[in-house]
Image (cartoon, helix red, strand yellow):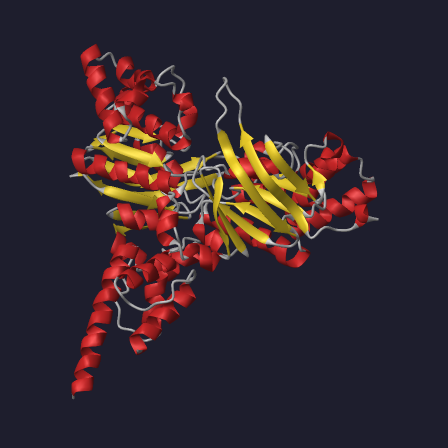
Length: 286
Length: 294
């Protein structure tokens, strides 16, 4: 019966190291990383280019398998090739460039692509495609050609293609890096909605600190290791450490940090505008 | 004198067909020599089409473009010259690298215009210096480099042509915070050293506030504003309505003002915000101290 029990951690990375072996030199991109993602959590992963965060993402749905250690997806070892379809259905992946992910010439056909490959019944497929497009707010565009869409819209179609498979978890590797501010907002709103309303676990890899500030948890990767793993408030309170590894903090955090450095007694756990304004007002009332 | 000037510049895509779209609509603009300008506007606002007019990549449907006071389409055969005067770095320029070594890639343009070997060498080294590439990197294959380094190689390739005007279309797209600050810092240094005109298309209001002197805002194919950073960012509400958020630190100071604190609303960088708050807090403590003594 244990096979049917839903495990609490959808992804479990256990003491994983990974090396890309090219031309004989095999430097580890990840070094003994352990990380468990509980069902329903919204996790942001930060790290500069080359820190190993994309490798970590690819290990989560068996695009890569560990050189050392084990990754479990809903209890299944990702090295088990027989289970690869189950793993990828459970953990879907969205990449940076929307143009590289769209295969069909009509939006709804693109969303149906994976379902067709999985042999889903036509009636069920229709329902899942419609539901997925509605969930990302692209239903009205179902008969459009992808090239007529904006970057943000294309990225939402790519997300619909993933959620049509009804995964427990989506891993997104810098999904907003190529988008303008409007596209970024659309995609983030969609991702947050999927997490909040449908309980889908989200692993969001990003360079935008404001996106990470809204997650349940922030994991910071540097040099192949997890150096911080905590709530956004706690992670962003390490201003110097983050800057030291080439990352940023939200402007509200930085402003409060500067006041603290100047000797004012301020709360170092501030990551949004409103809290920042309130903290400054409090200082002025003292 | 203005280095770039447009008069009633209009560009229409697919003219005469049902898909006709006016991408640039009656734009009258003068950009002075030596400015560092941030160009902002959401996707589809016309900013990319506008900058492509500045080096003659697209020909206006109507109106004129002047570079250094010369109508660039007066003699269409002369347009190649304009491309040397105005260098354009596209989005994701690292995809255009193709040579065996970084050196050869940067040297490609100068070689094509028939410069001597010595002059090419001087230009390659100067351009590499401006974008912060080490000597040892010059002999590497561009494909061994990181994304940020590749992009700097591509920018060096355009700088090596010694353009009078350098235009960069979203030079930081897809880079991490460190790579972004490095590229923008190098561009600013280049601008200060060469004293030429630099235009940077950006989606980041924070970056425009931090690095540029002026901002040009495109909205619905027209120039909504072209002014100093202070004057442009004081239009917070209109910019927000266009989908262009002003920097978070600016919003914080506006919120403080709305809650009755007397602060300078024109704060666009964390550094300026810090100065303003420290001043405010110091004054507050003096007042409080005074009140206590009274």
